[in-house]
Length: 106
Image (cartoon, helix red, strand yellow):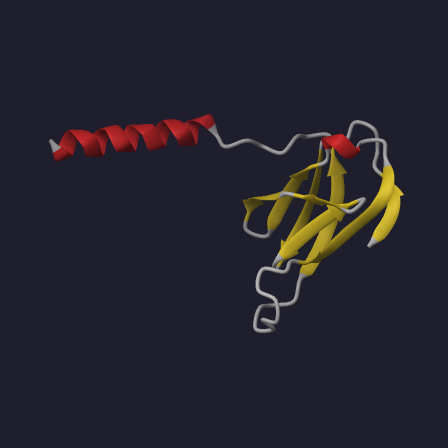
């Protein structure tokens, strides 16, 4: 954990992590999105300009399960880039695939 100021204009927190990740700022859990293997981002827009405690910890997905790997975190940074939303191109491909399957099933 670390206490500090989130820069003005911050839209996301980004980091590299291996393991079950959990992020909290000021006691509020920040939902994280996996951008690519081991690359994560979370919406930090509401915390821009605030001072508080940032906690990065291993999540509690399975309490008492010590078989999962230890959390490894690197390259924590605040970004003025928002967390990306699902690609519209990916959505179009999905719809195209469903329509193709529907035609073949007739």
